[in-house]
Image 1 (cartoon, rainbow, N blue to C red):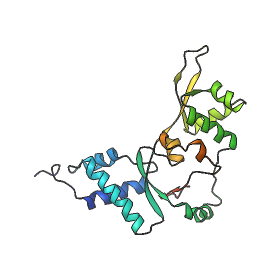
Image 2 (cartoon, rainbow, N blue to C red):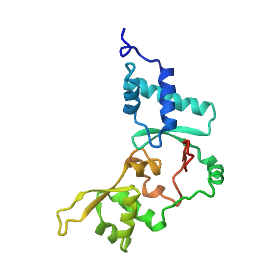
Image 3 (tube, rainbow, N blue to C red):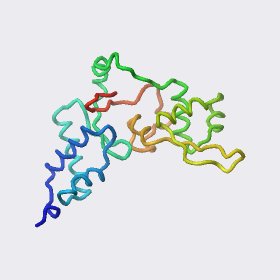
Image 4 (cartoon, rainbow, N blue to C red):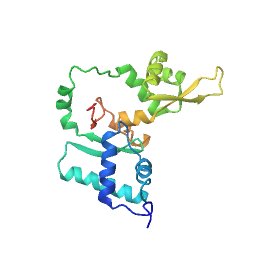
Length: 197
């Protein structure tokens, strides 16, 4: 049997997946774990998903300060909300840039109405949003997906994978309904070597 034909057991897949999760600063896709493992052995998508599900259970049962969650089409380690005050104190003094209320409102309109143009966003907000859209583009929370056929051919905006990651969503279908919306920030902090919130 060649090395590539050999199959890994779940425990080996788990430790490799865990190592990748800890070093990645973005959600890790199942296909990325498979690619890494396939350099030395045969592994199926089902086996990787099963290993990730076992990791989820392991972290819960061992009462760790973080959980493995599905976000933006991949998997990521996120600290539990109850540890946010400790992380905030630990990171005090480090520069953190928050989105303004106007930026959050504009981003929400893009998220719920996408694909959407600047004039459509402005008709809802009632104010100019050119500067805010530029800032959201620079932060990669939104992207330009094309142009309309209307006069002037305005840009069409939509949210990005980083938007999903930032707000701890796996897909746009996870956006809260109108009745669920309440002031506040995304729950959970990312568990990474940098300890970024």
